[in-house]
Image (cartoon, rainbow, N blue to C red; front, top):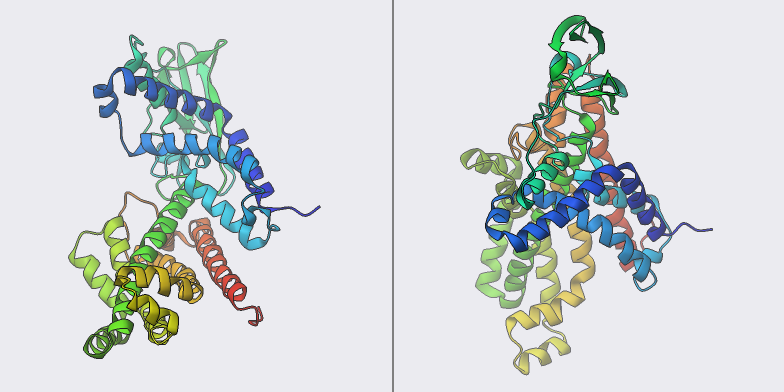
Length: 426
């Protein structure tokens, strides 16, 4: 039996749901409470909205809707019926990680606590979580209940509800927990007990931790989201710049063609990485600025493709006819030009996508990425330099993710190129 793409997508989504049943139930309840609060007390509901809430609500909504949609419409969507390949599998995993990061990550990517226990743990290391008593919140109305549920769902950066320990033992009226051979006493009334015993859970760091005790796997997941988002945004910017300037140069010709050609060649001749570093160093280093800078530095090859194709197309009878009947320049571009150059444009954009991801990693490695608030592969590799002899996992795992993503992007570009031109041997 051939495994189709939609089979694999359903499998991945099913695994995510099964591994996060408890949290997903809480997320669904939080979504429902938010909708109730939105209609009953819009003013207070509006004050509760933030990026984390929106992230969880969207992920919860999509993890329910997407499997239902695929099961109903998989026969109508042709690509879902294709045989599963390595490229499709990796793309599915990357997209699942990106869309459902709040559900697939075990903790907030910036979560750090009890470095004595969690610092530089090797992959598959296990520590104990000793739970403390929580301050009870009175559930007098929908707002109080929503805040309580939000605190259960959202992964906070710094939590006071537990302590990471190596081991625990009781002594009289105190509980003694050990952190790296150091014994610390804590009163029993501060500990959460279940059936007369302190509540303790095991926490396994699958890919280890970094120098601040942060989970490498969670940082990789959110780093994947950042890289793919920046890559998509930069490609969109490059697409519009390259298409518009290429159309103007090819269609207008003459002075405008010469001017835009010289402008493009200036960008191609100048080491673009230095220009990117200069611009980012001059202005604020944020996700938005990184997208704009990388997008504005990658349009040149697309410009050349579009310009050459427009020069050929404008002498064709169908193009001349469309112009004579009075079609605007916008309609000439969208109705006559783009459908005829879709093949080279798509291939160029796919290869550009991989280049942008690599450029973002390089900028993060140099400390000019999206900032410390967002984990990135390049930043993780840079941080691992100082610990390469004692914490190899800090460099190996983000480097491997970067390699796999770039390989997938390039292989996808080759597949698309072969699809449009079957004479190409791959």
